[in-house]
Image (cartoon, rainbow, N blue to C red):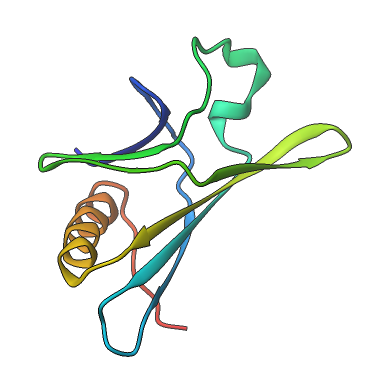
Amino acid sequence: MASIQFIAGIDEEIVPDVQLTRSRDGNTGTAVFRFSQPKILDSSNNQEGEITGMYLLDEEGELVTRDVSAKFVNGKPQAIEAVYLMKSPEVWDRFMRFMVRYAKDHDLTFTKA
C-alpha cells in the first residue's frame, strides 16, 4: 500500500491536495503537497520523533523531500506544505507510479486545472 509519512513508521491519515507542474520539455517537474490539519501535527497524538522530511512509500521503495514547512495560525500548526522536485523524466515517471498507487489506495481522482 502506498503511504505518506513525516516520521518513520507513522502514516499520515489526511489526504493532501497535490498540484503538479511540468516543464515544457518534460525534463523537470514539481509536486506541491498541501495537508490541511494533518494528524502528525495533532498535539494529542504524542508521536515519537520529529519531522525531518516527507517520505512517499510504496512497493518500489521510497521517495524523499526535505522541503517541508508548517503553516501556523494564532501560534497553532494548521497545515503542512511539502515540495518534491523531479529533475529528470525518469524521476517524473517514478513519482507518477507512486501517485497512481496512492490514488488507488485512497480513492482519489485526477482533475486537470
